[in-house]
Image 1 (spheres, rainbow, N blue to C red):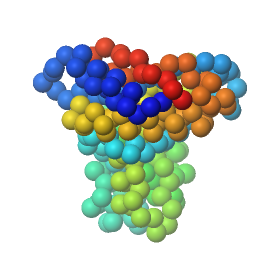
Image 2 (cartoon, rainbow, N blue to C red):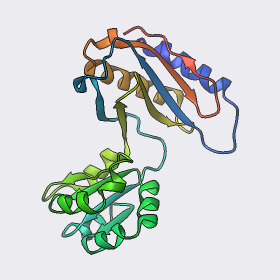
Image 3 (tube, rainbow, N blue to C red):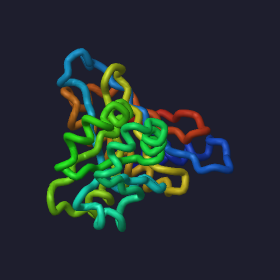
Length: 214
């Protein structure tokens, strides 16, 4: 897929989208073919760091014990060990926290407790914390998460992934698109032959078909 061709389509998608007073998001849809999703090995649940980032604030929450002091300067929210039990008994507050934060990390020693007490809320939302090993570089983990997106392929042969915000340049969005499609292609059983089509759109704009020259 030639980068210049994708860039042309990104420009077209921006031109055809209605102007709004709020910031719109870029969304990529990849339609697949020849995928038997009844086979677990054909399903995907991956993370990918967009080279140009998300173009918006991405919030990170860290559930910590000994790492809590260091996490305070890095995370948007720090949940201390002694707060876990209280949160497990306050589903309304827990659900609000889950909705307000994009990524969760947990000190590895706390992961069994987190799974037992908070997992029933975090799990279904796809936000079970990623474990933080001892002496982890919290800043590096947080910065990587803020550029990352989830790639999920479970029951239907379509992948939906955010590519950034309308505040980003067309070149940045095109770079994110090309990088992600190439990544997905490598993870599919038949590579490019499993990709049927791909579309890009802004929140309030029409879907524009991308030229597939994989």
